[in-house]
Length: 443
Image (cartoon, rainbow, N blue to C red; front, side, top):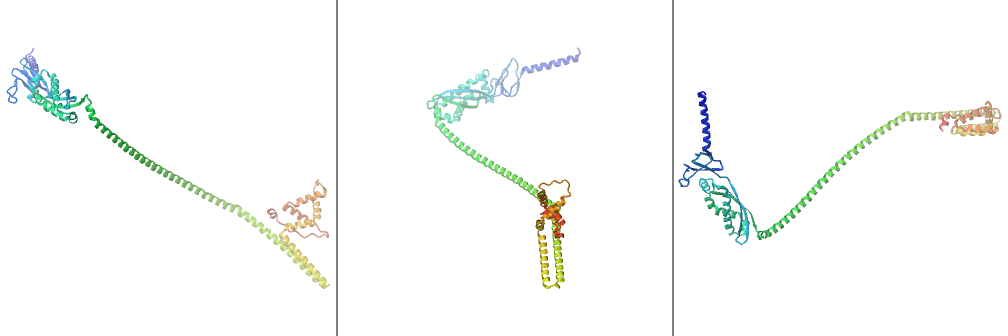
């Protein structure tokens, strides 16, 4: 093997040996513990005038311990809890049972560590028993000088006196009290229960009163809330009704506008229809009616003029005859003249009556000349082949009568019959006025 390798191996072996030896001789104190080193050369610095404790105390750091010559032991510095349960008698002679807890630890200074190490280093589990016995004695002594009311109402006094009373002994043990709590105080006689009854009754009454007041306040608040809710609901309903009314009013106004528009359209349509009827029906009808009236008036005026002309002609003829016969005799002339005037007046009156009631005049002429009309009608029907007439002459008369009652057509037939007849002396009767067919139909 090369020399360099051998040197390297030897160096590594030496390092490993050193590490092993270091681990064997080096001890480190944890934050919650103290190293108590005793043996050859284990001496600490002087503490409170004492030159040496006979062992070495190390906290928070490491130190070397020679195996076989020195021994290192650990003392816990963290907190511990010891439960207390003490039966004692108060100043009033009332037996009570007190339960509590003591939180304690080894002091952080070297004197406390040294005292605790001398007493509990190999028996650290017995610390709780020692604390229990220590505080039990002090509690019995202190409670014997207090009343039940003091225990209940002033527990701080009890704990304070207990800590003060046990402080010197705790220092000798190297221990300090972090906390002392009295958790519960019981009595077998019921004194504490009876002691609390008046207050409990008062508290209960106050609680009931407070509860009743709270219930009343809650009821009032509920009623007020209900009133507010009712007011909100009422306002909401009113606003809703107002909105619905506005909507209905708007809808009604819209319907009214539609109705007005439809009415206006209907009026316009009616006006257009009226104008169309006016232009297409009424005015032409009025024009036709006016034309018929004017034609009837013209025909009537013409008939009257013809009658007046005939009357004038007769009067003039009568006057000429009268003048011609005047020479024959005054008396005869006067008679002839009077007769001519009478005839003229009769013709004139007949013309006026004829103009006013043509049908009545025709009916009168028909009545006066009925036999001749029947005869003329028979001649007319004589040209018809194979006509059967029942009841002989009476049947022909009935037929003529029915024909003559057919309004304007019957009158036209009557006029033709009258025009074709002659009177007894062979002369034609006086001409009848002819009414227009349209007038007869209109009447």
